[in-house]
Image 1 (cartoon, rainbow, N blue to C red):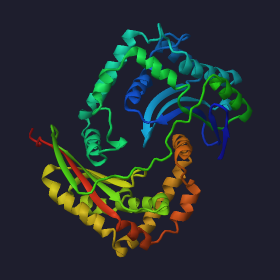
Image 2: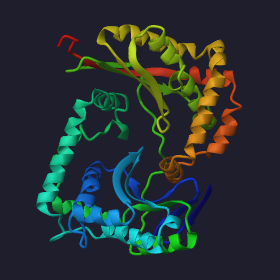
Image 3: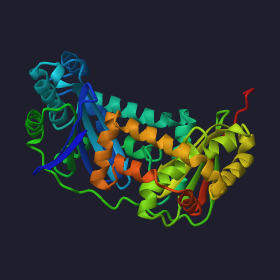
Image 4: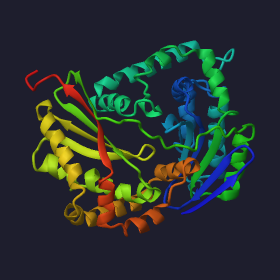
Length: 423
């Protein structure tokens, strides 16, 4: 796999040449500092830019037919936030051009440009009926998060744990913003993509470099880049005391979330050692949490942990019965404490390294993970897979125990199921 970056006048071009995939992906990402209201509009644009039609392809059916003609190519859009920044992405997926006629490659780029730059508008607005329909669908999908206790519990926990930071924001909490979205203002927000954002284009596959550069140049020739992004992505949480909270919901299962801060991490610990620590704690098959809470005591349906690298935190989540709350918390605390014991780490560290080795190998077979890696490197430099592989292999038991001594539980949240099995 060969990676090359070229800085153009109005965008950054990232070329990843590899023959591992039968498809080719073009990802255009518009990024700027996070803005709550503008983000709400982009969340709606994520839907409308596909369903609203274009000047040439008036309906979604017309678009679908043309994509079918292009060997079932596909175009996706999405909005997402990364720490202090937000991104709107348009993505084209097509069969690798070497398996098709040359015109398919050119026509796919033309269709991509049509969708991105020529939406079907009247008086600088989308069709009111389509706009209102997609707005209602979006609001309904946001409200439906309560139908998924794990997802709802997570956003309620994050409001508590990440209070005062961008991570406490969520669509459900900000539902009023979506209810107040206006058609004409959406167009104003849409136009900003082409003049107020940092623009990165990623092309990955068995590419013809000369043809690709030509097509990308044509795609973006009228765009203007404004590098209005934050590169200071690390956020220090101000939680000083343990915060414990509960909320009831009409389900049988309860969802438990435990937020841990990691104090005074060094760069080496953050980039290499923390992921090995977390693998031992809560991600591999025989992790400390899994064995202590589920296997030995059968107190949960599932349990695991995940790192938020931009806040130096670890979040443990578990599905439990509410009657097991106190015992589960006690065992989670014991598990975290046990990570300070060299004898515990010594038994598990090699298996954890093998688990990470498998994950590193899988990286090369995941086309979207590859794009995301190079994208995040634009915002916050991060070591390569091979560098991480090399250093992780050398990490010692004592170094993991050093991190364990920096862990503190700061938030506990239970989304408590109020029903019993009979209900």
